[in-house]
Length: 173
Image (cartoon, rainbow, N blue to C red; front, top):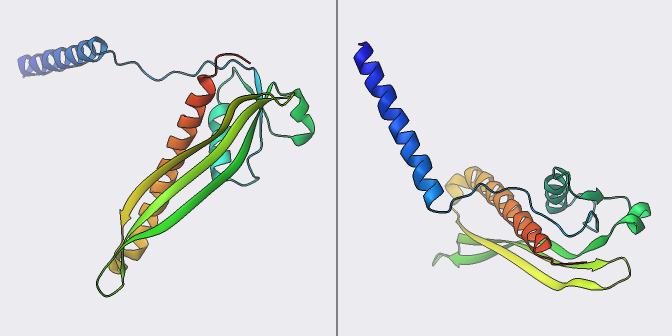
């Protein structure tokens, strides 16, 4: 029995080692924190915006950047992220011959610009759009509602990561 355990342990070790070697050889690298060319940022997300809350949560976890959310303190920020449009959309894209909805397209749209306190644009008006298709059936309406909420949450996380990559790509202030 001990020989079998030893063989299984040896097998697991070889598999784990070869997996690590393969991943390191292909250029895989864990996503780390971004390096931003600014030390403080003020955002104009609407109070209660789910996308704004996610952005503040993710950026707030990064100790390199001070996130200023109070409008009275906005002048202390190095840069200002002006959110021009932050919206969710749900559009019908497929119907049956009887006119019943069979497919929706979910969209998360963010339009923003990044500027310095003196008004110089660093990132001009930019629009990010993420869309997902979701089928619909009336017999599973509650399940589809939960799936829709899950898709919106996933799209929101993707949007925040795209925004953070854009902010990190800024060369200088």
